Length: 185
Length: 410
Figure 1 (cartoon, rainbow over the protein chains, first blue to last red):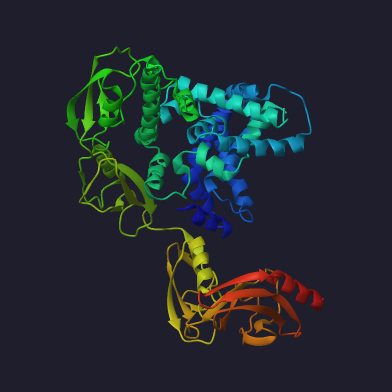
Figure 2 (cartoon, helix red, strand yellow):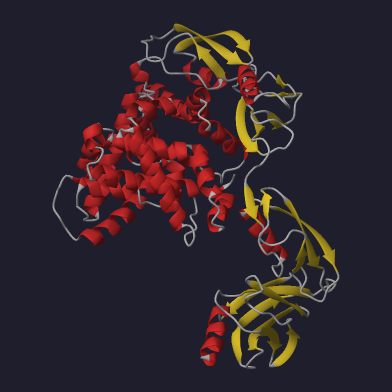
């Protein structure tokens, strides 16, 4: 079923939309949630929550890319759940590692104007991703959006782990430089 | 700013960036062609292909980078020896830098796989003794190296012997007729003969659940190894039901959209009727009746006036919540040129239309008339091109016109 038809089901308030969305993208979203929460039950609940959010959001929203929409909601819910500490006691997941890596880009814990910062940060991130080559952007997003372990990214792309690590390190440095230049740090 | 903020905002970048970079290629149904087919395999978790394909897909890019690195490492030092200092193009430096860990000659033997034999010989012939030990069919194009005996990364010296296998191109494999096979059997056979599966599901009253309804292309047929076969597998008879909506009053396009959203199918019979062309006049299954998905509903559609050259139809979307009786008139230079049939927004299924005729191009003013109060409100100006059959709303909105008339009522 294509995205248009899928969105059509949500718009027509057909519960089959939920089944079809789960069938098409549930696995993908479950794996993202699982990497964040490190627990299958939590991941499952998180994807169910995300499906409910999608159901409530469409209509009026009409996502351009259903997969990205669903995945982004799942990821946000999983991060919230992680932050709330429900999952922390059950295992580490990729979050501590990813946070550690990303700390290099920030290198400061100063609190500034939060809201403005967030909007500018998102904008800067989008521009930063567009400056990366396709391969480097793929690697960056697989690591920091989908939170796929470096070893799996390397296997998927047919690269050495060290290559992936060094590409990620250089991308983080580049992001750090850009954020600093734009006075976001 | 906190690291957590950065992590969170990475999740809020545009959907395009997420779909293009973070998700496997399969996580979008917008792609078409071979890429679109590959994604399904990934979704169905056929892990062997999943791991294999991204690598295979990237071989040309890897080979291109390898060629740049080989050129940079092998040719540039030679030029130096001749006493010249050629400017190093920035792009070369960048590419070399980016791929240094994976494909650096200084780390020993480079991977030649995916590169053409001619290209490799042109660059490496006076460095290494490249010997073709066999030419075989493979998924690589003809003339491309697909195997080498010196493991990439192992130390090499000038004049060392490297045996390579060169592709003869793809050998065709035969896809059998798989109708009625179980999905597992069909999938295993397809993978065994070197093809990939793109699985789709569909309801079918005759083919048992889990069996193959059809393949695209249909077997028996010769295919290149690595080709994708779209396989439609039966979900059994469709037991999901939907309540039939009221199609009457909709235009054909809206009826189709509605039907698609509810997994219903439509057939139409056109009849002569004064209603605007394409308007649904009747349906063969009553509103609210529960029917299986994919049920075909027969609609009777107004044929409308015969399409004349220079005639075109302008559609108007009726905002929700409007009520009363209305019609629309089109005016050119203050003179009425055409009038729509009267409509009641509550029965008009969200859309109405009007046919206009003329030559060349013209600006027409659309006016909404409330038949109950005779109040009028301008919808806007349409620029009409009769020759192309196109119209464009230049200014105004129908929502505003309804708002004006409804405010007048209150």
